[in-house]
Amino acid sequence: MNRRPFIAGNWKMHKTGQQAVQTATRLAELCSDLTDPEVMIAPTSLSLPLVAKALENTPVKVGAQNLHFEKQGAFTGEISAEMIKAAGAEYILIGHSERRQYFGETDESVCKKIKAALEAGLKPVLCIGETQEQREEKNTYLVLDKQVSNGLKRFGLEELSDLVLAYEPVWAIGTGLTASIEQVAQVHKHLRSLLEDLFSKDLADRTRILYGGSVKPENVKDLMGIEDVDGALVGGASLDADNFINIIKYNE
Image (cartoon, rainbow, N blue to C red; front, side):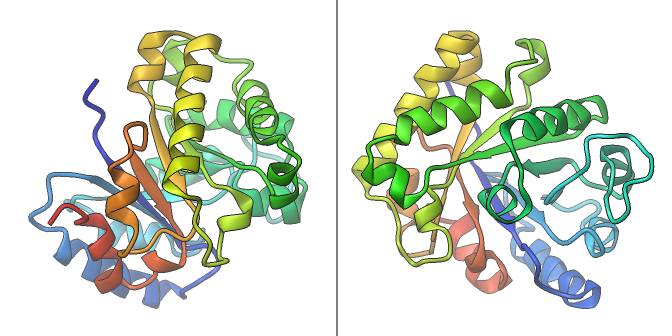
């Protein structure tokens, strides 16, 4: 199946509103003639509405980095899916390893957040990945199977039509380490088979599976050449538009 490539930038806790708008505007200029791949950036929540406004009528989509699963209430410091949608986001990152590691994100909360995102009309990017210890103990597939099956256990085929899966080995995030081509190929093939087992071959064939973990201009073409890799979730290398465009235009 012909899945449209998808390159996403996770800006994490970087850039003031003004800095984010400047970078987003520059990126839009560099992407002005772009038809493929689909491009998305996820700024901080404070910068989100400013970036969304700056990117109107451009090829660059906007996403958010986190949400709360309740629609409203006494949850100081949190932001709902409806607020994120109203601010101009189309995509939402859910279950990023840094959320799991530092903020107690669980498969159960991930499932609730996906439900809230879908109800608000956001497209979820479900992030999964194993730690170095889990890989060394040969538990990679056990961990990934649990994260996917528990994170998606409440949903049917129609609800997941816009799902994006992002495999990010925790040991490769911000470390400079990148999983080998063979490792990435094996995991992505397994994940597609898992989606087929849990749901259907059609959903498995349609779902875009991204790789994340120290993706750079130097390695993106090799990664994108893997059969079951449909894109990349990029961290630090997405913070500079003139660098990020070299990842986006990996085929040129």
